[in-house]
Image (tube, rainbow, N blue to C red; front, side, top):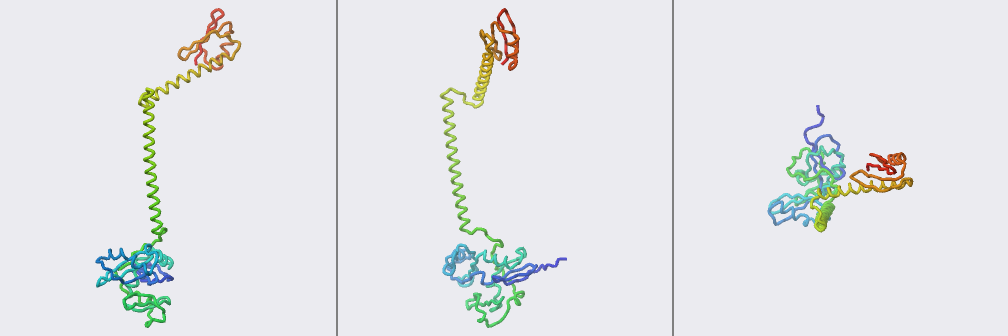
Length: 304
């Protein structure tokens, strides 16, 4: 069985109120946590009225662009207008100790306490003015000594909830706008760089094509790679041939007559040379395919 009530408990919240409950709660915030005024605004809709509220509150508040606003339409083109700082309300709720997941809804005391013209809460006094606006007053001015906490559970809540985010904004709107502006600038720079890179790549490709045409080179990379690989093979063969000839010339005991290269075989002709010594010397680094003597001549065929 759950010991937690399914019915929401009503709580009147001042700046320093402590809420000790495991029940769901409906929070009524005191005038300490919002500003309220009645304005004559020559518009017909609440949406139109909300647009002009920052300007109307400028005479009593600073940083009006950082505030949140709500409007209720009254008779005779009048509007009941609320201004509040989301962070200020959020901090008061959080610091009260209540689990935020238990908060059902939040309400303005202006709308919910009309049946109690004057009351006190935690040594603070509140009263409705002649214009019907609930304000905080000195305790000495109270003509009735009612404690809101003794009456609050009897209050029937209205449908006018506070539109509040129960989390703290890490960034204010000015910082958010600056981040968005910086992101847009960064995006434009990247777009410009990409465009510049594409232009440079196009120029390089044009230069490559010009070089191919002027040097009568094949147009495809496949043909070019084939030519390059052929040159690489020829170069490697020439290097091996040079290394073999250098190796033979290093031995001063050999009397070289001539040599010839056919494919990968180097034929060396020597005169008056010791066949055994020649074969032994060459076979240390290279493969001797054949070694024949004819008179004083020695012919050795070596694989590169």
